[in-house]
Length: 197
Image (cartoon, rainbow, N blue to C red):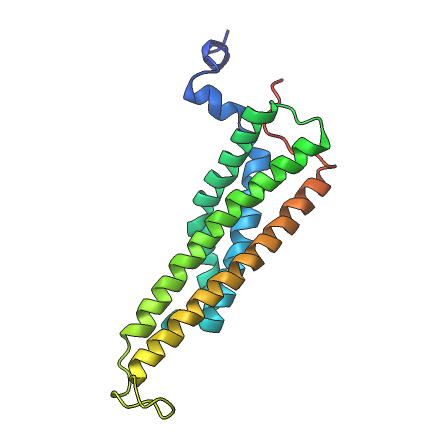
């Protein structure tokens, strides 16, 4: 008996190696990659529209870098959703309801990660925008009160908040479409446990 087969036969399912071998990596990794790079596209698009000018240079490289950096978090999000689905619904999803529920769990987890990334990016953009030197204080022509820098900061904050709100909706719809597309390509199935030969 070879060393590899001895190691595989003596490894208990309760160990970390046993748990990792039960993960359906052919489900988790493609979903995470697809969702990370799609959400990254919207993040860079919104940054180009309302972000700080310093961060809008080289959008393709920014998309590639930011999406790649976010990929491990998306892997963890999809893995968490799939693991939770396996715990709740069992290792094999037989009913359409359980497949849909699992797909929605993946959508929810990945959308939360995408929204958190978008909010962090918007907060950083706001910080950069508000730290720029502004024009000197003047009175507002309509009300006679307030300063131009304060008005600029308030407008910038409102714009960033709206971009996160709209972006959250865009990410949710995108993630729903992508996960639904993957489930459809897999014939209406979504593996939550790796099949053991």
